[in-house]
Amino acid sequence: STARKLLTLVIIHSDGKVLLGLKKRGFGKGYYNGFGGKVEKGETIDQAAARELQEESGVTATDMEKRGILTFHFDNDPLAWEVHVYYATKFLGEPCETDEMAPTWFSVADIPYDVMWSDDPLWYPLLLAGQQFKGDFCFTNTTTLTSHTIEVVSSL
Ligand code: 6U4
Ligand code: NA
Ligand code: NA
Image 1 (cartoon, helix red, strand yellow):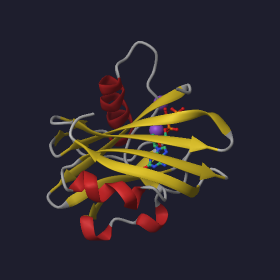
Image 2 (cartoon, rainbow, N blue to C red):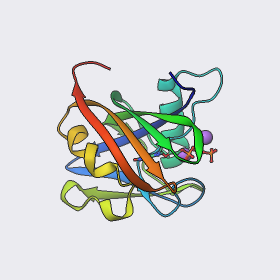
Image 3 (spheres, protein in one colour):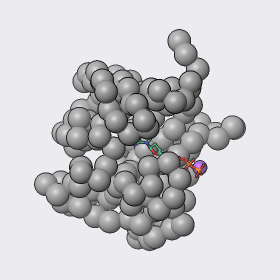
């Protein structure tokens, strides 16, 4: 299989609301997203997920579980992105704005899909329904979704 870049994404779902951050810089600037980033040398994917959540939102999740693996292919990047998606309902601390993200709570019915990555409406409903999933997405011009597959799985 092709070489990949490993990334994490954490979504907190508590009291009927989802915590998302408006990305203030870098990749995906201007989009609401979960919290995450690149896995660094010497850390596990789980450790990277916890670290990025803390760095970007100020909170520490206490019941984080992996729920999805999403692979993104970009026409302008030879490396596929493998994003490990985590779900949590319990956390310590209060969300606070950081250099990278401005955290905001959204009711599930008001998730702002029109200012999120265009794959998000395809798998957030699975995540919020407690399912595990794998997906494959092809983008052109960084943000245009041209094809995808997605499946519910019984283990990751
Ligand atoms: P730097 O600035 O280098 O520290 P870092 O925080 O490590 O960056 P970043 O923010 O560029 O990494 O990582 C991208 C984030 O965007 C990851 O959490 C994965 C997430 N992501 C990437 N493509 C996505 C997509 N199509 N849909 C989605 N999240 C995506 O919901
Ligand atoms: Na990030
Ligand atoms: Na990072």
